[in-house]
Length: 354
Image (tube, rainbow, N blue to C red):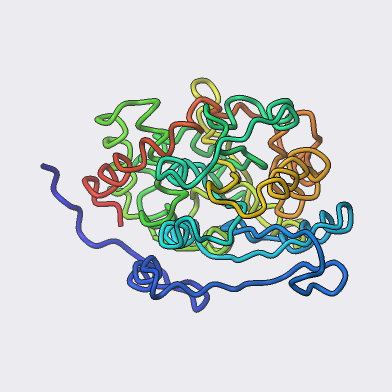
């Protein structure tokens, strides 16, 4: 029904897989998974109680699991991969999976795992007390552990009046000055899913089409997008919040700042890292214990490791985050991102977003 836009600008980096490679990575045959062990007492198979985690949220995770092992004596074995790769692996393994807990870097992907029947409901007062209802599934199959926002980033050297809404990125003044992550990335899809929830399909399509009309430079790395702003390749962009404090830690004068979008309406798009106990968990009790620890005692360790906001609103974020302005976040969309993911993919395709 909708015509596709002409080919847009792309930038590739050695560390970033090409689109075909990413698609190939989704097949189980092509999945390359790195398995590491955070061990207590030597890490042998019979060293004691253990829990196995499949995790798509890998930033700083080894130190988090080491801390849990030190506190509980429970050995953590974990396998990393992209969220879709790990979901496909769970589907293939079925009841024979060794995974006790699955952790994702995106709310849509944990909900898709739940919809596929891969997760078990967990009744835990510890979890429901720590994690707000908006940040856990209605059936308690998954719980958020940290929050991040996908926001407008802009050059402090060239932009004095940054966009204040997601729709404003489609203003013609940003033509040739906009950087975006490709359509295949979960962060892009979940942002568009939230637009669909808040604006409806037609208006969400109009917004995405306006971004495409500005001839964006597609870069499949939020870090590289921020560096592209600093280098003058674009003036405004969309990235997750945690990438900026990483760069500011190395260079406090890094010339990029946040513009919190949609503060007078729905709030900035919120996404979460989340986890759930697998339906066929061999070590269910150890998995629940790890999940409860991550939601309570380990909240700061887990969120601070990647400059994310804790899921528990009572836990103070890292100082690098408290230095940012206060903001309004779109809590209402988190549970809906998985349901709306197929429609988001359709809108991105119809808009010609690459």
